[in-house]
Image (cartoon, rainbow, N blue to C red; front, side, top):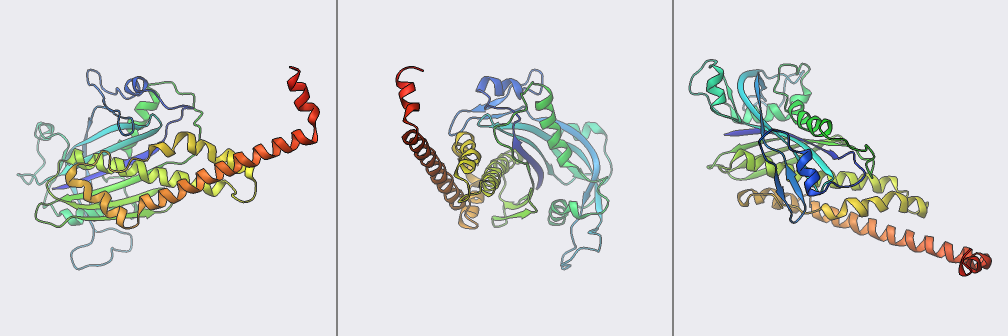
Length: 338
């Protein structure tokens, strides 16, 4: 079985984290369907899973033995029909995600079936023709290189739909405590009990990532949850690295303190890798910890942020004492209640 998905992650446009009650109300995207919430190790809320009907094309990667794609990245496509799952998730009351995924399964009849056939199999997309899992996985991950992508399965649009539902259904003050960008993780997982586990994670530009997995027989929703967890931590690494780059460390301690203090207040406590990984998917995070070593990078950045905040606070206190020594009348006025 092949599972395809995409996750968009960004900071909720609100000045403070939502409480668990507020998060539950914001992510109640379906009438009569409850949200799912976790309190530990980091508060997390997931909306009900919604279904979206699709009749589209799935791009194919290169044929076996062919190392490169055609000039325009076009290796053909297959028509596919079915339903795609989506949900919104909120981590720590701050990090908002829109997630979409679908299992690609072989259809038992080589023709387009009535919608009742596909609705009876929610969360699955069926190619009309031969199912070439490896070619479909590679074609999906690299679909953004195609010149014409209008007819392809648009998991990005489905993921954004969940985010728009959250933002339109509740009034936020639009004053996020930190100005950050968003990230997009596109992933493909081949669930084959006879294959060896494998992970490939790549950064594509500043905001896009690709994740390729080979797993055993795992439920698609569990794979999606693991990918959402990875996307949260990739976003944290990206956001904190960007703030450090803006902090002008070694140039202006007051500017550095002003830029890095919100990182300590709002982001550092959200790091909890593997919290929502199923046991049979723990190898994904273990592999990424070995190389490139995400927690090692995070620990290094956290130590740098905290040391700069401590230094900036000490420097600011030193300047205040120096000012009081130069102008003792300021201290005398305060002593007299002025």
